[in-house]
Length: 224
Image 1 (cartoon, rainbow, N blue to C red):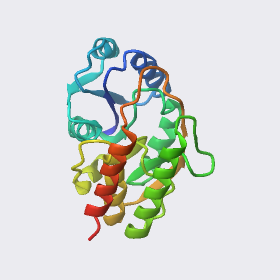
Image 2 (spheres, rainbow, N blue to C red):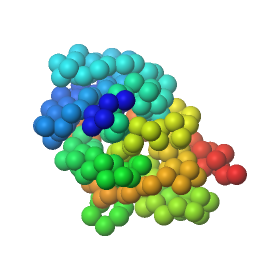
Image 3 (cartoon, one colour):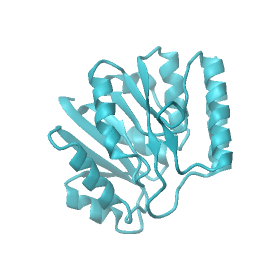
Image 4 (cartoon, helix red, strand yellow):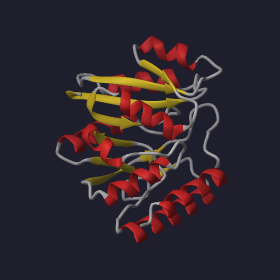
């Protein structure tokens, strides 16, 4: 672990239409900040990896799902601050410095929220908004937390807290798992407003009902 190094972990799968733009913007925003970028690719069939390698990133592979990719990326990271973000330009790189500052002033985890004052989303249909709010209600009820958002992956972490979370989920439910275990471990958490943009190119990988069911199972199995 290297002090003052920021590790950006980006899971990818067939993101050739987005990856160059994402990496250009991340590097531009983080100019002057010591950082590394780790691409965890799900064996893309397009030029995602070829294009990413032009930016001197570390590329590793995982084909189980977003959760598994993030867990592998966290393990490979060398920084003392880790940030997870998506590859589709839905997470605004301009928010990176606020996430980093939140960890540097002492918070264990900084979570972007689309549903607090100043946040918003351009890319969530009604059924997913309803599901997210329902799951937020359940997590807050059962784990005595005060989250405003749940199923959103734009987050920063102290490297030292990752082992405490003991993450297991392989797919999109990892975001819910993080919220639950952070609450159970009484970690220091801050939510910051985040604007979720529409995907710039390609198609999303989240399956509304299948992944929603997995999120519900994750909540239930962590109640004890």
